[in-house]
Image 1 (cartoon, rainbow, N blue to C red):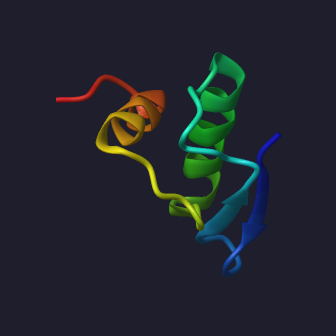
Image 2 (image 1 turned 135 degrees about the horizontal axis):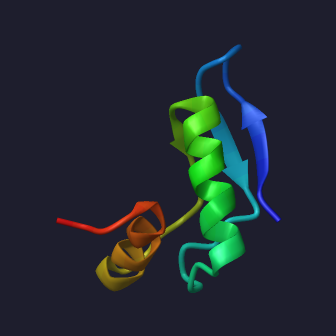
Length: 65
């Protein structure tokens, strides 16, 4: 489960409970998109994804160009 901590009122959040080394399932992808729309900016600390893991994570937000 993703936990969002607001960084400032109405703008930005730090997300916890996200592991970029693991595949993003449909429910997690929906939570990520919802967090981005709600907070406008999301920050996820303590991650060191490989390029392939980062691309898989980015696909949670839609088709890549």
